[in-house]
Length: 267
Image (tube, rainbow, N blue to C red; front, side, top):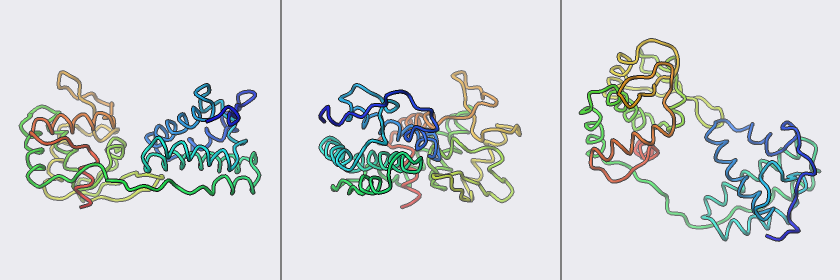
C-alpha cells in the first residue's frame, strides 16, 4: 500500500460524525463490535502504512480505487472468509459516511460495489458425536461443585438450543420460563427468538436454578476459584470458551469450541 492512499483526518471528529464510530455503534452486539473494530484497525494500518489507527482515517475520502487496493491486499494476506469480513466492515463505514452526508451518492455506490474475495474454504470446527456429548456431560456431573452444575446446564443449552456463547452470556433469569421451558434469546442483529428446553436440558437447567437462586440478573453467574458463586456477576463469553476446553479435556475429547456445540445442534 503506497503513501498516496493515506487518508488522515486533519483533526479528530466528534464520534457522532466519525463514520467508523457510527458504523460500530450500529452493530447489535459487543462481540460484533470488537470483531469489526479489529477489521477496521487492520484496514487503517494498510491505508497509513501502520502510522494511524481507525480514528485518524478520513473514511469519507475513500473512493473506488482505494477500496479496490485494500481488497487486493486483503486477498493476498488473508483467507477469503476473513478478507470478506473485513470488506464488510469497510462497506459499513462507507455507507455510514454516505448517510452522514460526507460522501456523494455516486462515489458511495462505486466504492461499495466491490466484489467479495473468492476462495474455497474448508469449514473449521466439527460436530460432536453422541458418545462425546455423553462424556462431556459426565465430566460436568462428576464435579459436584456449583461449577459442575452450572457447566452441565450451559453445555446442555448450547447443544440442544444451538446458542452462541455470546447469546448464553447475555441471558438473564427473566429470559427463561421454567414452567414451559421457553427461553427468549437475544441474537445477532438485535433479533429475538424462542428456544425450548426439554428432557435432560430442562433438568440440568432446573438443577442450576435451584443452586443459583431467584435473584434477578444474569442467568449464568461467575464462580470464583474457591468454587463459590459470585452473586450479580454474569459469566462472560470467554469463560464459556474456557469451561468447554476444561470439560473437554476432563472427558478426554479432541479439542472443540462452544460453536461446535451449535454445529452439533444444526447437524
